[in-house]
Image 1 (cartoon, each protein chain N blue to C red):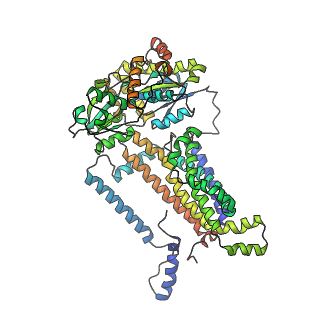
Image 2: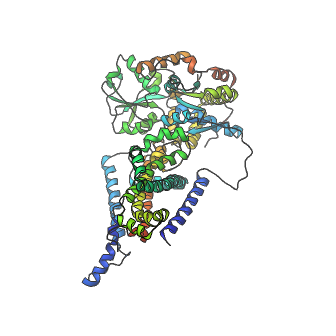
Image 3: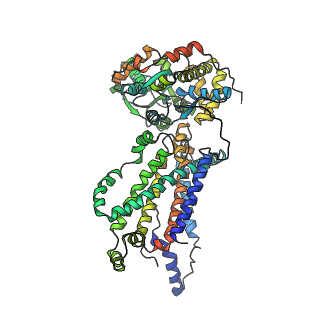
Amino acid sequence: MSDVTPQATSTPVALEKESASAAAPTVRKGADPLKIILPLAVGLLFLIFWDAMVRLSHSDIFPKPWDVARGIVELIRKGLLLKYIVASLFRVTIGFGLAVLAGVPSGLLLGWFIRAFQAFNPMIQMLRPISPIAWIPVAILWFGISDLAPIFLIFLASVFPITVSAIAAVRNMQPVYLRAAQNFGLTRGQLFRRVIFPSCLPQIITGIRIALGVAWLVVVAAEMIAVNSGLGYLIIDARNAGKRYDLVVAGMVMIGVIGLILDILVRQLEKFDEVRWGYANNE
Amino acid sequence: MSLKKTVLVWMVAWTFVICALHASLNLHFNPFAKKEAARGETYRVGFLPVTCHLTCPVTDFINKQVAGKSLYEPIRFNSFPELKEAYLSGYMPATFILAPMAIALREQGVPIKIVYLGHRDGTAVMVHKDSHIYNMQDLRGKRIAVPNRYSNQRLLFFRALKQANMKIEDVQLVEMPPPDMPAALYSKAVDAICSGEPFMAQTELDGYGRVLWLTKDVWPNFISCVLVVREDMIRDHHDTVQQLVDGIAKSGKWLEKSMDNRMGAAQFVSKNYYMQDPRLLTFVLSKPPDRVKYSRLTPLKPDFEEIEALGKESGVLKGTAHFEDYVDASFADTATNKVEAWDYTEPKP
């Protein structure tokens, strides 16, 4: 999902310490201009490469970056962009939210009760690899043409990574926590709330981050169903609208940009102590 | 704030905001608006943004202009599989659909009746303008894109091959959604494309496609799409179905009445229903004017017998359902005798 590992986030802190002793130029935390400039430069290079490729191939069908920007402006002016973003975010919020509500508790339980795990794991592993696209016909037959069908598809795509990461988190828990808890004489409920859940949280958050990426990935497929709004719908609709590949790419760009924002937001969770302790090299 | 509190507060706030925005922007839900007087039941009709289904949005638009409301609500789909599944799930009692697909559904026991035709003709075979393909014989060994196994365009190709004394093995047919066909022809991924309009005209309009032949040259009065209705709808709401067929019949006659009407339809349908550049429909509906026709829309036995025979030959139909099983022409007969074109003139832009 992300190219930055949790370890990398601690680099400025480490640099700060080194600079104090070795008298190297001071790099203050949060004020590193390269952090902004480098990704922008890569983005700019990509746009130049894209533009050059379209010009070199003399394609008058594939849009140049400028055409796509104009397409986005056209969507904004028609008031469609906001509508479509809201529709997609709504479906992902509900589908993904339900997946978290269902996936985390069931994953914790399946991780804890070995017999339940043995019973359900083959079924989970069987359902997990089925692409949401394969579920489209079933979703239409069950839910008709409403928001429910894409929500169902997004739920299906994101519930398994969450469940599986929660199961793995419980099963990989260090036995020392349990022994300590037993020494304190915790009840089963207390054990779950005060020991198991907090100790699994960092891994669960990682699972949730991956699942959110998947949920957002599936939005195009989910909106292939005859809903009439959403960024996925924008792409499908633009294909029907003749030579509007600028709008197809505009849809792709918007999905990418929002995906990036979502990832940045979820990564904020790692700043909390409850999660941070789970990653190595964090001081 | 602790993690638990932050996440809870943000999640609840976010869910509330996004639900409220979605309700107001996309579902047009307004809790402060006065409740409308009971509108009475409306029925959904499925359609695709293609010229074969043009009478559906035309009927809806003119109905709203003339009567202010419509008994039927057109629901736009983007491909036939989804449209078919929505119909099967009971989401809509009526839809425009490919003729062989309707017959195949009947064979599989779906309670479906064809009540009217969507159009006549309106299909073309396009090749790249740089290619050296000028007749059917030149297509030998070439790759040709057709829309769907159950499309009449595929059967059309079977017929054209037979007329040219060729066999199906002489060409390579690939299935491809029509919206993807222009790009495939442009990039020469296929040698010829065959589907309903406006996708074929688009390649001509953009300057890289050339017409190899139009349906009227190979299969005059070709039918690709038909209007179907569920049998229980016919049984329980006979008059409502008649109203639907009457409306579609009026639109067909209106479109055939004058070129001005066709140009008006190209504008309002492109802008309000198909979300396409109006130039495209303007082109399809006028160059030439008989590229697609909206006359003689009553389902006739000989036409369907030919589709049945070709369907059987090409392997998509079993031949177990016959004209009387899957057609109810009574609505079309009544409409043909009764209705006139809409008394409506689209204001010039």
